[in-house]
Length: 138
Image (cartoon, rainbow, N blue to C red; front, side, top):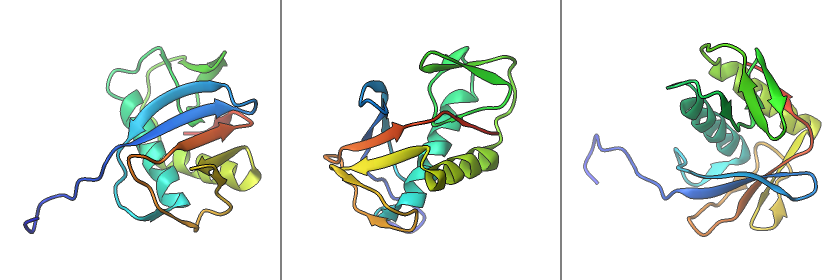
């Protein structure tokens, strides 16, 4: 790699499931750095969600944190009006939600215990965000 080139990491398959283990949503996430912490994974997830939402403000989307001025519609989130999503508010809601136990992260069958926990991810990793409660913010 030459200086100035961005490092490219493999895409990691991410699956969102509800508290009963039923799949809600699946997508590939390309991390910004490897190895990383649970907090880094949450940050990369929130950034990916916001990037997916903002360009065309789709009427329905699935995200870890439900944006303000929206409502839950089954397993999807429906925006009332287009708006710029506040990335920092989304991240704060996700971090606070992890600390409260509103969702868990399970990597290769092991539940992550803390945000500062180091994790190893690869394209064969199985990453699940298990949602127990809806997160709202930003």
